[in-house]
Image (cartoon, rainbow, N blue to C red; front, side):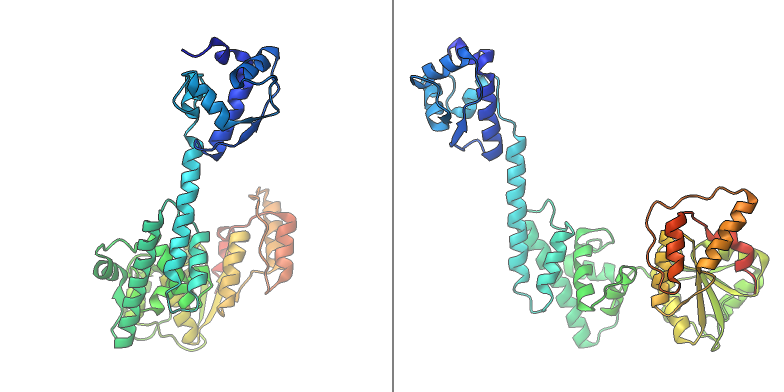
Length: 403
């Protein structure tokens, strides 16, 4: 039985200090700790425990452990602390183990990618690490991930060399990895391969990340995420489908499969308005307006991007209108970078919309985020930043749908 003086409250500062040391540096650590402030009873106990004429300024933990074991308080220092009511938490050990595991995983990934022939391999593994794609993996898991990415890339390269046609991503995953869903969107491996393909194609635009797969001959889901359209002036190919929908007074969804099988052809110079919100297309169909309208949605799908690309290639005049908020201006800027013309998206248009809302007594929502730059009209960004009032394009329906 340990001496009662060791469990006296006067010794709590010392045991707490020793516990903190072991929790921070590990239960096996045996360095020295500074003697905390102790009352007279505590100092007397320390002198007696260590056999010193006075309590030292620094206490050697190995010496302290030997004294506690000799008195039968425990079989080692952590055990003695536990017996005295100051057991070591496992949280610190778990954190240290996790850090060590993470470090090993990162190094294993770097070592694996170092053998790749691509000049961007180092940039790829750096990006994978920064994105947290190795989180919760040990070295073995990291090696497996890098190896799986390599196998997918090798298969893509093989198909390219042999001139094979496109392959569905689920089929690629099933054939190479044995699991059709390993490359599904949101999965760790999908994100890792996407980064590799983006570097392979030097693709930087986040909205066009899917094109990295497509350019590698890998099809994503060709039927989901279709683009909503009204009265496209198409000729040939999909024209019968589009014309029938227009005659019926309904907007039509066009999938990537449809657009790839029958690329949109359109008379040169035809005007098409791309809007952010599907309600505009819906209203255009309800009112049977004469102009062609396409909805980009808040984040343009692959079908939207493909259609815009085909329209521009066909010589169409493609206009864009979106919400007057930070997200809307960001999307407008991306569209403009692809050759689409911002339409009614100037500072004057924004101020007119604010004036209209004020006259109608409408309280507009506020924009908490700083707006992006608007190269087509720098003053627009400045005005939105100054006023921070949002104008959704649904408020502008009548003006947008005029022919």
